Image (cartoon, rainbow, N blue to C red; front, top):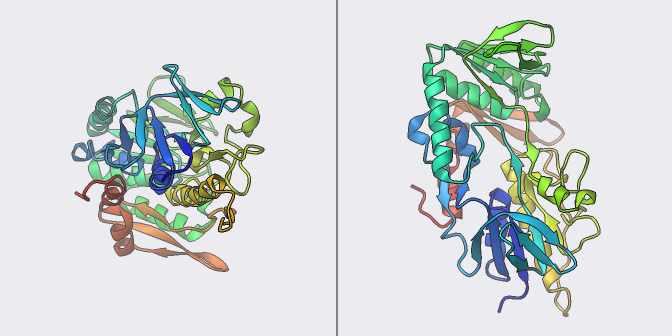
Length: 368
């Protein structure tokens, strides 16, 4: 017997993990505007290499055995009626609702349009531009910017590639100077022009860019890997602005519940539980929230369990691929700077397959 209706809004990494964890113990409804799961980890390579164009898309149809998937757009959480309101007017009743709407990423790591086919067309447009470009500019020296620069360089060894970063070192948000030096060494050894302390903005003419010192750079194509924006505008428009931080993230307590709402949880990139917005953090939050939701739904009885508190993953392994056959892994070391492992570990962990077999298995498909 399944106790309680759980509505999960958002079918990204955290939402999929949470829905699957609760499928056997609650009546789960997963809501997402997409008909397929978008494996964003594979999207940077898909934006450069045609043979990867269809890889990021995995159907939802095998994810839940007992729950159901609803393709639609949530526009409001009616806390009085305890219902999620969809754009169609349909209402989904809940005992617990989970906000897992994630964040918006710059292209090519973005699901564009309303279907997988439209996003594949966007990938194809990026691929054509990269293939024809004499100079490609990548703005942003975090993990995504470094990874994308490497993918472009390997796909276009004859083109000029520039990576411009506003910070003093690559990967500075990871706290590892060693990792930043390793990334810069790899890029520069492959003739990528790395520019640090270089805040970029579009210039006055199409195809030109200007840094904070006034220097003008010409480029045929540009990609901006400069951060994400949480998908929470719909909550603000629905009158739930008090749930959000100034930056638009959902404010949660130590149990990943919206402040003052014991039956409303928020997990993944959408919340303010951690500044480290990476897939392992989203999955860890989903697992903990699944436990706490079970506790909430079975709050009475002799054998009830205790809820758990989330501890942000401030030091978690981070893999930065340099194409499919190289990369580096930042491995946390207690009391010291992260160790930086090389190609062999990085290729096995992520670079070769970009975790695609793992995500396919998570959604009920074979690895291939």
